[in-house]
Amino acid sequence: MFEGIALALVKTLASYLFGGYLKAHYGSVEIEGAPSWYGHEPSEAICVSTYNNGGLEKLELTKKESKIILNKRIGHIIEIVIYQNFKKLKPDEEKFLESIQKDKKLPLFVDSNMKFQNIKVDKDKKMVFVRSCLDKESFIKYEKLRVKELQKKVTFYKSDKAFDELNDNKKNYNKPDEEDKAFGELAK
Image (cartoon, rainbow, N blue to C red; front, top):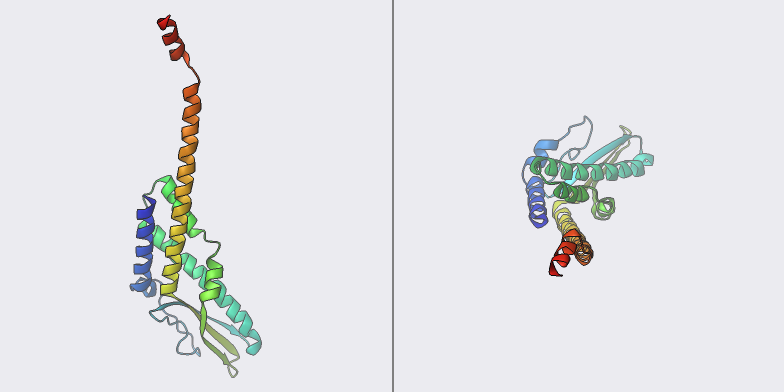
């Protein structure tokens, strides 16, 4: 059951990223005075563009904001894919998908894999422009590995639960109940 959901999620995420959905949903942005690459996304990456008023002193702040926005965007993409494709689920299936959404390691993955593709400090306009990108293929590989990890956790959880049920049944089996007493009296 979870294997099917996990496989469907990864396939849907890949088609969402590599289909035209991402561009259709987010579109592109044109800001007067911005470089030509600002707000445009190459087909092989998930990108965000940020800017700040100021000079070179604002570069690190703009790069930091770019990382934050890219993390939020990737989280939002996962939310959209789950919302659009997994509406009628059982409670345990919903928990499984929630665990996929709540990824504490995602910011580390993004920080270690993102690249600042373009940086421009415009001294005349006193503006800093940054575009940071994450390769779509590496993101899909990351999600596949995460889904496999979560599937293992779910399997171990289910097996532990099954052993607990067996132990509970064994305890109940060893305790004579009223019916057992009645059959004991009949045997006399």
